[in-house]
Image (cartoon, rainbow, N blue to C red; front, top):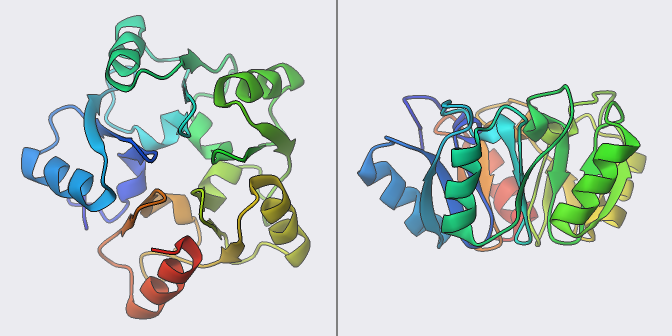
Length: 216
């Protein structure tokens, strides 16, 4: 699937097992199709007026964390529609979605974040948190996509890193690519425990691997 004519669908949309945060103004047919595939309620949202929700949001089924750029009314709208705690992450880094990956069992955060930020992630998402890099990158949120059934990881992640990801998130983790070879898997995957949607350039072998990893 494409969103805004782009196969990088993970840049625009974020979901958990109950809700799908979509940019306000996204075509209703596209929003309906995505929410139907994933078995969730669509929630129109924006972050600082932007439609790039993916890099600016972290969520699991227990809470939502948003970029410090998020307006008060935007936070209130998400709270009202999801009935989840929604908090800004107090860090100078705005693209927090690129720095954290989480499911309901745990979270992996970038080593560039402070211990104060780690504590807030623990509190809002109600999970154990570990700091690490993946494939020598600190942007761990770009390098992995996690659900409560599996984790897709950057293809250059080491065996030690894959095992550590498995230990923290408590589900099987395996490497793959998306959109015909793109290693930054979060850019092209929207997934929860019910289903997964991938960018339109994703090839047959990738679809098979991703389906196996995410168990959908």
